[in-house]
View 1 (cartoon, rainbow, N blue to C red):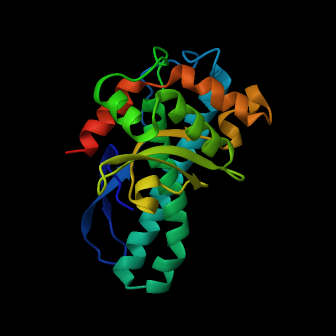
View 2: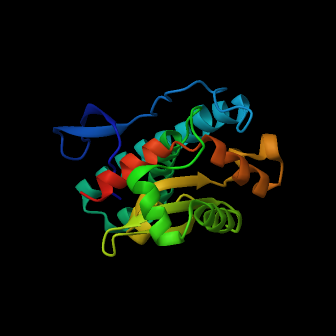
Length: 222
């Protein structure tokens, strides 16, 4: 996986090579809004647990796994490298996905997208309402845990809707550049919406940060 997130650089001594090597250490990103800022659509308790516990766990486990992977690389231990791939995918994907998710949300969100993003949505889906309906249906239909995504296909230049299981990262899994993700792991909604996932998905549209989604589209097209 390629990680494009903010990192904290730390110098570590390799027990195998006996040399000082720079290793990038991932860190939990700060939110730009308070935990209660998305209420009533997502309550403060969910946001606090989701960010400070669940996302933090992905970050910590990713750092541990990467350290083990670097040791396996230094030893030339291919078996260990292969065995660590699922943990890298899960925790790395969890870190990537959640870092996007927090910026996709805003207490000033909701409404409809404007400008180039709105034009692209109308071109590829017919209308904004059609996008909402299609993405909501795909997201609600995720079996077990996973994510619903609006992505950009660089080859065709079009917007695509898809879903990924567990914490599989969109770009690393499908090649689509992530623009908007909806987390449908139960920890993202269960305390407030119980097992009624459709109500959560309906509510989250009220806090979507379309400015952020538009910025992601602009960056993806470069």
